Length: 66
Image 1 (cartoon, rainbow, N blue to C red):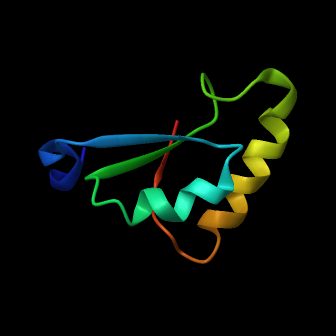
Image 2: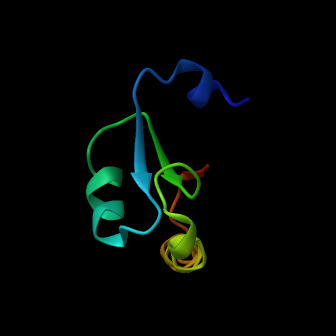
Image 3: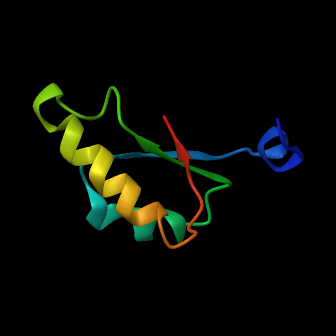
């Protein structure tokens, strides 16, 4: 575990099928942003959510994926 993660006090979970919220979450000031592919995404939207997360992370953006 990194020091930054160990020191994190705020974790913001964002549904992976809501790419419109990724940038807002990253700019929110939360210590950690988690793009959620599990509980927050219905089974029929998981493939789409994975693709949204992959595209958003591709240009070297940082977030955790859960």
